[in-house]
Length: 247
Length: 217
Image 1 (tube, one colour):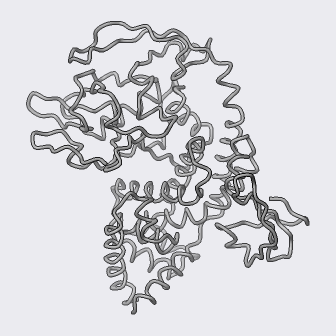
Image 2 (tube, rainbow over the protein chains, first blue to last red):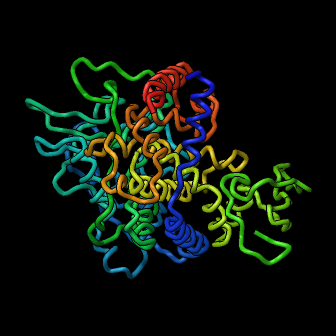
Image 3 (cartoon, chains in turn yellow, purple):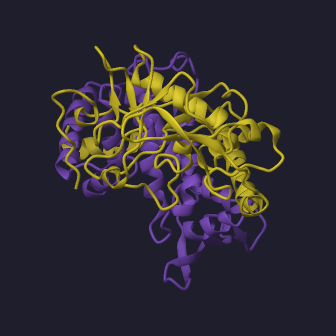
């Protein structure tokens, strides 16, 4: 079979694939919900007041939890509705307020343009997948870092994950937990898949938890799958690691 | 979509796929020079004002549910075909497409509306489909249970999916972008952040593998 004939046959067969018409209704429901939310979103923010947050400050020189910092009460990053008892009980980490992997109002930042951030230390034996799932769930459900993790020293520049071993526990970079593109260096946002069984309100809730700092205050619904990016060797900690070449 | 005569709305697959041959009568430009609307004739002879993607996005951001619906109808079939061709599973394709539209809608505020919407959406779809395929612990080359027994499953679809199932996720993605979505290798390289040489290599090897399988059919 000649290449031309093969290409034409391939094109024809791909275009013959018949999408399920019933699926369109589900998509339309999602898009309409989004459009309604899009119209409401500016008014909701104007009526929202920030509350004063007291959080644990960090000494980037290597110490763990240290000074207490009072955040700007009118910080726009994670404002919560005044009078919302669930939200007011939720302690927010300052590391999430302006996290470059969560807040990208001007587009994705470059990994080499972001200042040093502490790492997130996990119990021995935690995998990269386990760390991302724990981080995702805690941010979406409660707007905080995982309870079973602790704050540690920044990882070397460009390192996203360290497996741990010997005296070093597993550690996740808090500049770009989901990594960054190479060679572009653009910090990735959380990657996840939402099953079609989720209703539009559940989908919107998860989106708002990640992008507007409005945690669910409830467990993640069934059907949410955290995607784990394939890190390349220069993004993994280790004695023989070479830095990623960014342009 | 505005219509001069009452009738069931035409479902567009991209620009005028299912609506059949369309003749452009007039193009109205907005201030930026991008076509804001195109008036054409549908296969039934109705005069339709077809709004551009940029117009729909602006309306959607303003809360127009109608614009949101039209944008979805226009782009979801090709996105689904791409996702299905890569993942090999209809259920996964639906999840990927729903997820991709969610991401695209969330990112509209920072999307440069001077650029076309479809390539941006397709990049999200293809990348998500590859991620899903890689993370799917089931045998990626196995067909879904029940697919063989379905009356409406055509033999040609089965053969195609079996053939695609032999390719690696990355090669599938590039093959789908080229032969289903119609992008040239330099465009594929830009959208998937690959070197052009890598795209050509994956296409060549992918076709070689597909030829071996399809020639036997």
